[in-house]
Length: 106
Image 1 (tube, rainbow, N blue to C red):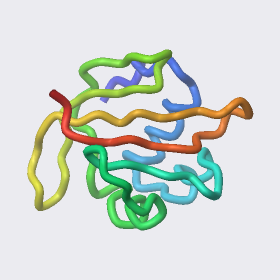
Image 2 (image 1 turned 180 degrees about the vertical axis):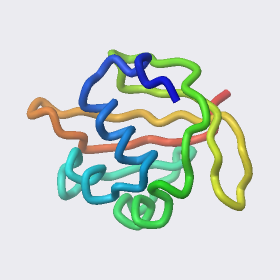
Image 3 (image 1 turned 180 degrees about the horizontal axis):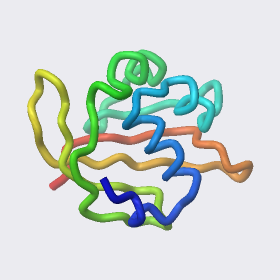
């Protein structure tokens, strides 16, 4: 997949780790107390990453917005099927991500 659309270098590197199932590297871009939402509902970030990283993957990158921190594309979510989703990374002033919002893209 062409990741040249990912203009935020930290997002691109984290994205690559996600796609290849490199949980340790993916988590290294986040604060230890990072939070997340899934379709607006709070979810345990650490558990989500351990369960889904590398198993649930982007098939396409369709749009990149918000200074490269919001990705929308077609996503294969295991037993849930394939559908459009977004990942929105929240980056703190130190460059680490402290929150990840995911959900079905409209």
